[in-house]
Amino acid sequence: MAILIAAAVCSPTQAQQYRWMDKNGKVQFTDTPPPAGARDVRRNEVVISKPAPPPVPFELQRLQKDFPVTLYTSPNCREGCDLSRLALNRRGVPFKEMQVWDAESNEELKRISGAVEVPTLLVGRSVQRGFEQGAFDSLLDSAGYPKLGILPAATQKAPPPPEGYVPAAVAAKPALPAGKAAEVQPKAGRYDPSGLTGPAPKSGQYDPSGLTGPAPKPGQYGIPGESK
Image: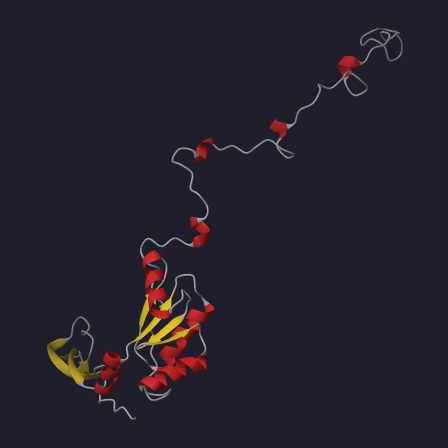
């Protein structure tokens, strides 16, 4: 089945063009304002036709109505969901992306496909769980969608995470109550001097306060200031 894409419709746009005379008396035409000192300045509106985006072909509109394409993903789904989105974009198939992330969306996907698994592709009432290029193509072919290369490729991106979504790693870590974070102190341990305990050092060889012995005798190295 061939789908004819309508020719682009041109929509007019306007641009500015200036006519002016320079200091030598020569007439100039520019699309920017003339320099200071220009004479006989005139500004004209120039209408430029710009091609508008082509409308969606009628047959493709019918397919979207009879066999809508929905891709179920989740905010933390990476490779499989990215490949699924890329496959649909390359084929130029219009699709809606639904994110599965809470109890309600999980229940909806389970009701539609019989399991909670992403990515899941829904074409009309036909379901494909998990990404498999051949299975995706088979579902789209059965519905009558144009094959790869007939429609221009699309660039639909992944939607942003839903409002209220919290990544699993963050949700698993309980938050401290307000004002409690400052009260948490590290426990004393091997590398915390405040946690080291033990007896006070005993007087000994390296403790001058514990050294005892006879007073120094007067002599060559005796009391300072003593004359020989």
